[in-house]
Amino acid sequence: MPTEIKPKYSANTNITITLTDLSSSAARTTGRESLVVDNSSTRYRDVLLSGKITVGATPTVDTAIDIWVYSNKNDTPAYASPLDGTDSAVSFNSAYQRDSCLKLIHTLMVDTTANASYEFTGIPVAPYFGGTMPKYWGLFVVHNTASALNSTAGNFEMSFVGIVDEIVTT
Image (cartoon, rainbow, N blue to C red; front, side):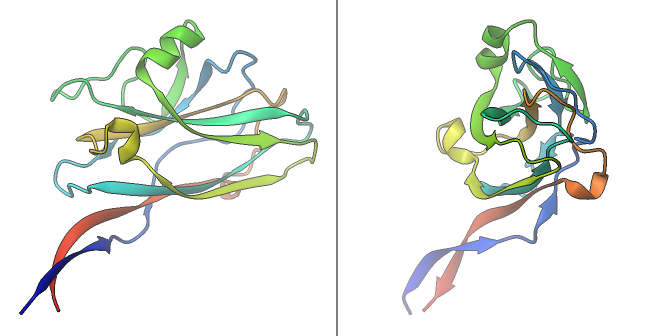
């Protein structure tokens, strides 16, 4: 019997990151990192990110919300400073420091609509790491909309679906 390798998708998994009331950062260097996602046992070959981010009451047109991804630098696991793998506020000294250890995976452009939600779906992560998922990874979210993000936790979603290869007999 012939066999094929086909993708098998996991259940949707929430990513822990607190984005309520996240302050604006003109230089987009002060934002929030997620709790690290441990890929050491699931060994997803890729994940597809989806989510929703809601702006606050007075966003400025043509500003942006950036979603970045980071990974571990060793098996401890440790992360490039100032990241620590927890759901916490993070401030980089400069955009150069941010760009040296993060990979920009998506930008949501914003208009002036108060409390508008911006959704994204199906963003693959593995290509940002040379096609291989890291053992540990997480997100960093930052924006320069000129006002804090929405204050209601239910107005934010960050999640992924993992992909593994499955051998299927046809």
